[in-house]
Image 1 (cartoon, rainbow, N blue to C red):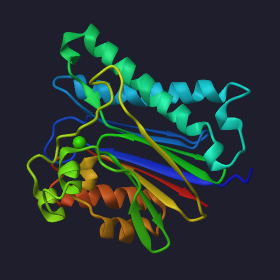
Image 2: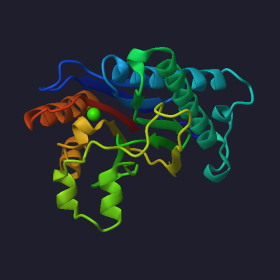
Image 3: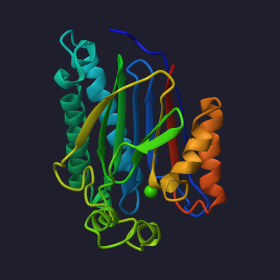
Image 4: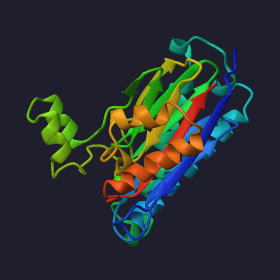
Length: 254
Ligand code: CA
C-alpha cells in the first residue's frame, strides 16, 4: 500500500455575532481522520451534540484500528473497501449516543449536529456526511464540493423551484433535512475517491461556506501552508460578517 504523507490544520472561531461556539472538530493524524460537526439545539445542546459526535467517531475508529482484522489495515481496491461501512457505523453510533443523551437530560432535548468525516487511507480518500457542513477538494486549478448538502434549500434547488442565486439569499438556508442525533438513527452518505499528491481537502461548517465561495477557496487553499490557508478562510468569513461559528479543517496529501 502506497502511503501518502498527510499534513493538516484545524481552526474554529466563534465568529462576530454569536456568544459561544457550538462547532467541534477532530484531527487524528495517526488515522488520517478528520471531522467537523456543527451542533444545534438550545441551551447547551448544540455544543454537546457536536462534541459527542466527534468523540464517538474518534472512539469507534480507534477501536477498529486496534483490531487485527480492521478495515483500516486492509489494502484493497476502493470498491472492495470496508471503510465506507465502518464510517457509516461510526456516524450511526454518534447519532445513537446523542439521541440517548438528549433523552436523559431535558436541557439537551432536540439537540443534533451536522457531521462531515474525511479518512485518507493509502491512495484513497473516504467521506461520510450528514447535514450541510461540507467537504471541498482542491486539485490543481479546480475546486469541487464533494458532499451534497442535506438542506431544504438544496432540495428546492435540485427540484428547480429556486435558482442558485435565490438559494444563497434564502431565509430557509439554515434548515437541514438530516441531522445526527435528532432521531435514533440517520441516513449517512458515504463515498470515496482516488487521491493525488497535492490534493487539499477543506472540511467546513456553514459559517464558512455561506460566506466564502468556491473561487475564494480555490484562491486561498491551493497554495501556502495550511496555517495560512485555515487562517485566511476563517478571516474572510469574519470579514464578510462572521454571523455564525466558523470551523475549517484542511488536509493535504503530499
Ligand atoms: Ca452553523
